[in-house]
Image (tube, rainbow, N blue to C red; front, side):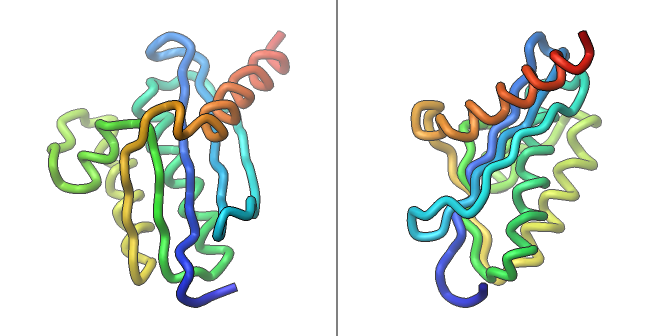
Amino acid sequence: MSGGNAIAVYVDGAAKGNPGPAGIGVRLELQGIVLSEHSEYIGNATNNVAEYKALIYGLEIARRYRVTRVNAISDSELMVRQLNGEYKVKNENLLPLYRSARELAGSFEEFRIRHVSRTENQHADRLANQGIKEGLKRKS
């Protein structure tokens, strides 16, 4: 798959406690058709770390589809504003994740990221929470 249509990459990270057990959720769509969904437990992390890890994972998957344009969608205002250059990354733990996300974003001809409300990101939110549940189930 290649070409002109932008793939939509919905991402969310969640942590029960901050930091605490964390998960990521990623949903890729092309013209409203779901290409794939992913949920994963990532261990203990902050919510912001989980948000970045979800984006990085989503962009890695998008690269496998060989698309040239990506529209990332997240309900993390902090991450979106940092990646759009509106906020500086002050947290040292986020800096390597920010750099990885920027590098991956730069591998596409066009990359956009926008902030949406949690209600507009329900699928990725559900997947992130599913990742936490699965991880906690394995630990018990």
